[in-house]
Image (cartoon, rainbow, N blue to C red):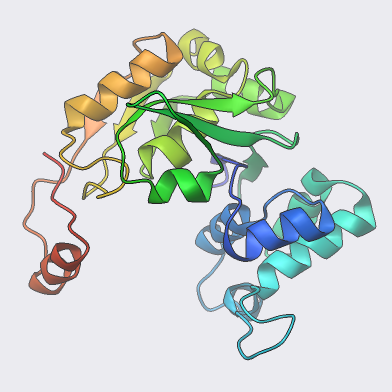
Length: 248
């Protein structure tokens, strides 16, 4: 695990992350926080604190404590990247977690009818088919550490995650797809267990690969990891209620 590098999309504009992004002008911390929790020991008290979410009818309602800590460390250090590094050290995490970019990137989508919508939250909730997504600014750059990690990696795992609002926002940061192409590593797509009714209704694994290749202009997937075991009954019931289907 100490050799692991996680590169995390920075286009979240909803929930606690969105509020902190707009009110404090910090990068969205939520997905970074989730990675920190994932790489920490589950029994760690600090990891439990990162998960804690305030409730009630007040200004803190809905905020995750982990998001607030990252926002505070960003202010103290005047650097979001240093904030992530500091919190990683506090949690004694092996490996490194890197934001896909430290620029204020915004996600936009062109829909099948030609209309344009902006913001990850709106795109994720849109019922219309998505033709393509775009990053603003177009030249948003990755961290040098991310490019270096990709170029020397033994394996690059893409996904799982929402195709248009989690996977592609990473791949479309300027220079990332080219770094993946240059890397001698095997490129593995970890296919989602289920489709998403808003983004990928009716999509097959081949559709996911096609969209990735169309957006990056590269044929970059060498292998696909896909579940072929039956889902537990309680998960089938839950996903049926969400109108999701098993990815095939």
